Length: 211
Image (cartoon, rainbow, N blue to C red; front, side, top):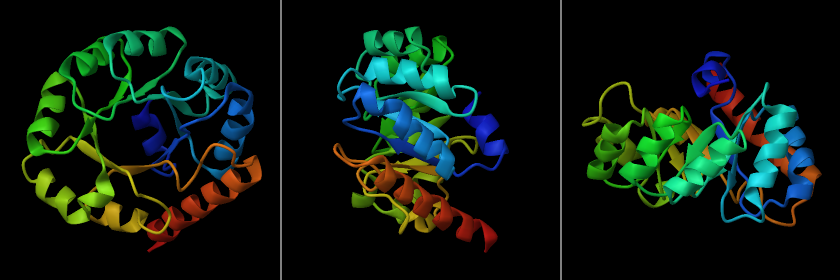
């Protein structure tokens, strides 16, 4: 399953960022997100034993969701993600070597950028989608400006300060999707709380789509 496949099926363009997730929570949290309608799940590598969580969710939900890792900072991290079956690779920065290795391994790439130079470097290294981070500090107008110098095929995702209340602004600015972290999941949150927040996100996206 690819991100193109999911978007073609008109699933909400929302990546759940589960920073701090513990392996024993992974399957319950994954099930709650998918039940609510979110099918893109990222476990940052600065979470407890992230590879174990990613591997478990990939086995259980890999046919219904795109599971992968975030905060990947090295080629070795990319390779370990691939080894456990992760499918999407998210970084907070623009590292051409990391991006290129992910492309070689056939992973879905979502590297982070802030400046146009970083965005173009990520594209040159093999990315078709890039992540504006921290998005809220720059705003939707910044997305419109950056898109003017990027190839038309490049999709931008906004991450950092995003949520149900702002998804419409980002999509209107030209973003393909958003990643949501603290507004969706924080360590210690219950499955019920995360499920309800996920439903609110999906409802916000559905309302925009209907309009």
